Figure 1 (cartoon, one colour):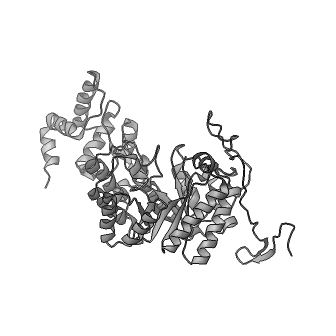
Figure 2 (cartoon, rainbow, N blue to C red; figure 1 turned 180 degrees about the vertical axis):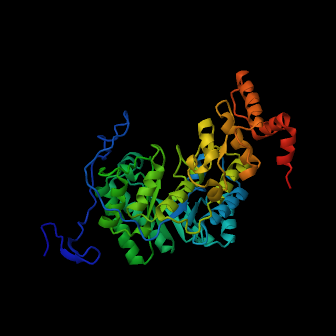
Figure 3 (cartoon, helix red, strand yellow; figure 1 turned 180 degrees about the horizontal axis):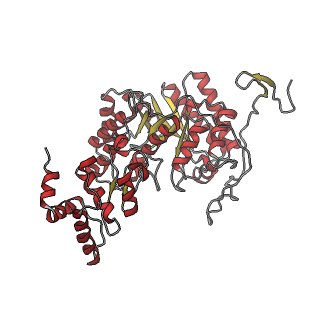
Length: 469
């Protein structure tokens, strides 16, 4: 039995309920673009609208991370050298662990330097991250990718009317026909297409995104070659609040791709930018509602405010799954050091997990808590999980507890050997520290300065703890 719109009733073995077959959305052509001016009027902050429609959480059996450090990320900083690319790729491989939880890494292949980096990474023979590319849609680039031995490549398929009408000066039908022709060309070369649905959070979801994704799934079925869809929140407009309306609803986008276009979880990947501070929460939401892959970059580097930080999603993975599944978290610290020491990139000091001060306290009352029980003021065992012990920065606010904690952590003193904050040496050091700030000092004191200060106020103690066997 079918209803007026041609939908049939069927018994679902997944829900054990009678359900209607999914409505088939057709391309909705327009003479004028739909720019959602009620949400994006440009002269005010973009608005979040609600329709109070909620979709069920649908966490896939497997979730993973993909990387765009060498593509989107590299567009925002000075180009990496080939040596740096290979070094970072090796670190990504180690971070992903034996299960290869960092599944893929995306590269440009435009220049000889780009291609050399790709070839050197391929020569390492790693199963993960798989080397993939992002190319222009022309025969030369397809032939190049095929000749290198790349199995999957990204193809830009902008899907909002901002791009289709205002940038490309096309209609929706013309854009879809163009995109489908490009995808067919990739399939003819035997290359797996990864279609980058640029600006999906400003796109007409039912009028363009779903009909186009449906056609891609049809091509995939006909060719036997999987076609991946990367849902690109290009401007960071995605929101994850319950009951938010399309086109901005992250969970609505993922649900719609699955249920209205028939895209399996393993073929959906979320790529979000951080323009509104939502990159991490949006990526986690995409996972929760049925997207297997989240696309990230190391340290979140990328266009404008950057991409979702890869290291953040490693931690988010462990939080959601209750296990790292073999990912080697201390490599995160090695990556941060490599960026600063070898590439010359400055990481803001309070950046979670990678900034030099992310687990450093300055307040004396917090240092006192650390002295009594590190767990009181440290987010987790950062020494064990990231090879970054909790620390204190000594300044005008550190007090006796801060100095005692610095000595004990810096010199590795514990138990009976630990120096109490009531020790005379701590009082003497605090007097010297207070005098420095009374005289106008404004910066925190470094380890070498404090070591010299300890040596001056108590040479015997310094020799005993600094030169232990």
